[in-house]
Image (cartoon, rainbow over all chains, first blue to last red; front, side, top):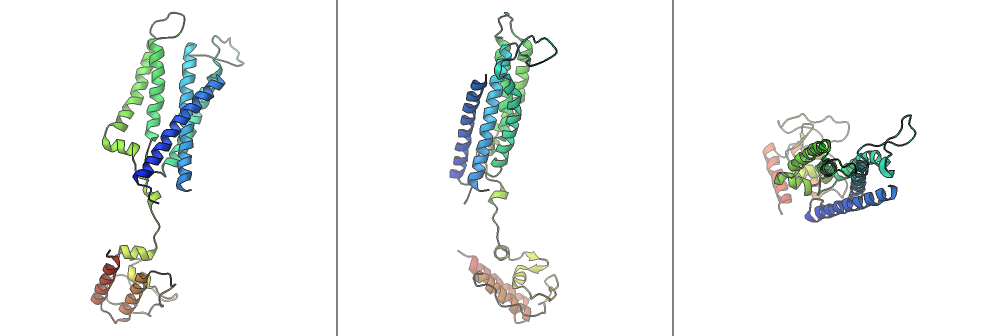
Length: 35
Length: 253
């Protein structure tokens, strides 16, 4: 599998963006629960 | 680990990192709401300001964030695309610097205090500490490309090739002093290796017939050629010319 294609880079970029958004949501929910 | 595994690992680390930074940001605001310092638990001193409920999560978030950073970095070094490790530092200092600025310019305490210059100075320092590296990370097109559109590193994209394939790609490469063709021709065990260098046709036994049938045809041809050369039926020049023709014919599209 060729990893250095635009599709692969976009895929990883999208996953990382999703991870950031999901992480912020997790942080908000966690802090809301403990505070 | 395969591609999907590295994607999941880097994403999991990023979730932990982003969650930790969020908790740190919110926890800091809660502590600043009570004046910026607090204490809790059993102490020998009288506690002036009790910590808000979630304050314990602030130090926890620091370590969790570092762990998340490590997990993310480990996974991301195997992937193409974003390289966001360099953004963690600006994210930390700019988000906390925001708090310093906001609370410094507009303290929430009911004591009626004006601007908290100590916090404003901290805010300025944090913005510099986070902003300057961010400018560096975004400042040039090559830096931006590295940040968002990197190639997967060579240790991931590198493919294993056999000695025969290497010989075809680099006919002049030498293995322990022998040319690729000679090396591929091989010698039965127990016989000494031919002398290094290009001088004259080496003498010695004719190598064994081509090996397993699944070997590429080119390898077999190279082996036969090398055997003829070694036996003396082909001069050095004839051997080189024949080998070149063989390789060109095989390599041409």
